[in-house]
Length: 563
Image 1 (tube, rainbow, N blue to C red):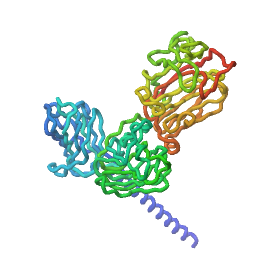
Image 2: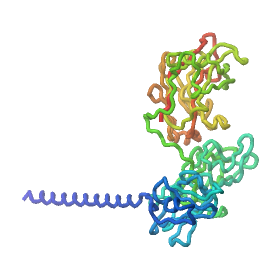
Image 3: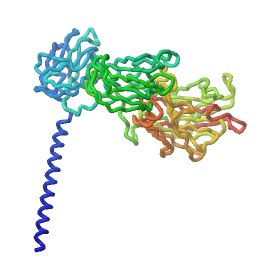
């Protein structure tokens, strides 16, 4: 009698297990089908494609949708042209990718139709560019047409290597506000902010900003708005504030820039970077400030709007993040030249002149201040000698006109000198400094600074508009006496931040997200160049004294950059 319940219980457990497995299998199949349905796929390749004209038989409309980047469509030489693809059936179109030849359109629209006769604009007027262009769109269409109205090369027509239409996808939000027209309650344009126009909040340049006028704009309310070009569904807004931020403000949308609807409101704004999840529909989006953080007005480095729809411009493409450990060597100098050789002019440029920061040396182009020693090392030498009114000389050299890098591992093996007032450094400057952008708006990355008065500690620091000089964002770290041997300093840099290392050990990590949320804009997503120098005296290391050795030598075994 006792065995029957056991067998019965076993059958029940087995049935339940089978049911669970079947349910899991069914859920997996449903998820797989759902994932397949959600995947964004090319739906135009090989589909019937026609155009207003063909330049000649070798460049037919069908060449733009054949999936072959070696063939192209080109039109006859007039401004009003079009090219159209029949997808075969109506479907939810999510994206159009174009690959333009040199004869691109400077004005065109993407249009949708369900019958091939009546077309509606899926975008506002767009501008093409040589090469790839991605255009997010939303809507249902069987026919997708490019309506081309203005040519980049007036002596020719239009030419496309590829015209690809995508359907499906998850409709992930895209940046809608880049390079779109802005308007504000007022704008600052004076010696302190020249110019701080509304457009600066939408240019994706984290070193530029909008600010209300210093004469009429330090009042409430203050506002800034953006025209997205077409109706959009707004899902996220990102604000990167200057210290003149709003403690109380609203995010509003409008179809006409006249009637506004609130989609977000706060009275506890904290400044720095705020990422807001919102939901609303409109062509225009506005930040409407009602209470300021201090006596000044309102100022934003970035006002980025994300969602679907609109008429977005394609933002600049950034290089892919390297995978660390990075192994592709893109720059190196091993300094293996014979003794007395000046730095390789194909890689380095002397930067002569009077220094900054209260330093007392003169930077020369004399080989006595920078030369190889015949042992595989560069010697940067600070000397006691009078040149151009200064009693000390040294060298500063950079790759400014020879080599720039954005992302990767930048490293050098260096032996630093000991002595009061000596200041060796291995660092990088934003390359836009060379074209006129002033420090610290270009950005500075100090991979290594050592003060000769205490060579058992070092510094790694970032400098930007909101954190620079003594207020830079960085770390002082204790270590062994660095003057006794060579050591490897490195920066591993990608779009998420910069990791600083000494002899393979992390000494500091600057997270982009943390910096934006606590200090200010991150301005390090652009090319930089490398600098080596040995300074004498100054605000940071303090003065030299009778114990400071001269000549003092900074030895560099190598400089390497990997991506």
